Length: 258
Ligand SMILES: [Zn+2]
Image 1 (tube, helix red, strand yellow):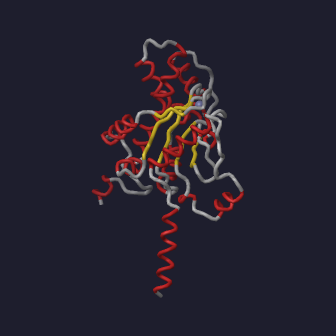
Image 2 (cartoon, protein in one colour; image 1 turned 90 degrees about the horizontal axis):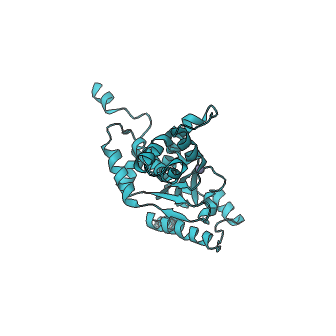
């Protein structure tokens, strides 16, 4: 029995050995991967048949190190940008990198089940979704297909803030500011609508970071972490924030009525 116990203890140590890295280490891996891509020194890690075999027989939660919300734009491929491979990144790509119910639900899966220590919300230069919403806000929009308005409505407040804060930037000159504001909008929407994301961030179990990808140079510009902290505090203070961490959880009101 003692031998069996020892064997189990050793196997437990081995499973700890493949545990995902800390948030700082995960961020370092993303930064180094992007630097390799930009400098033409990609190593295409974790992309061979052995990795696929491992993927088929493993829990991705022991390997994937970042959840990434970015745009569907064909110029913004996540694994390429970070020189990553199979079972490295848990990726959500949607027009305008918006954080609405489906995207936030996917991020919750990434942080609570795939257990990635880092969440990257990444906008990009030349984002068509932000351009379209900016044009519409400035009064020269065009007809949108039926399902597009409820998709891009999350971007509206970001564009309005950018226009308000950069009155000197006329016409399309405001778009780069709107693209950055739209990253902050998604961070704010995530924290406001996800009690799980707030708790894990407050407990230091995940780190949420904003980033801007330059489609021309390939550079990922990492945005100030203090701003994420501010948005987390603002979401905590928001009386309209979602307080239920789990589906089916009774509200505090419902509890007191019983
Ligand atoms: Zn885009």
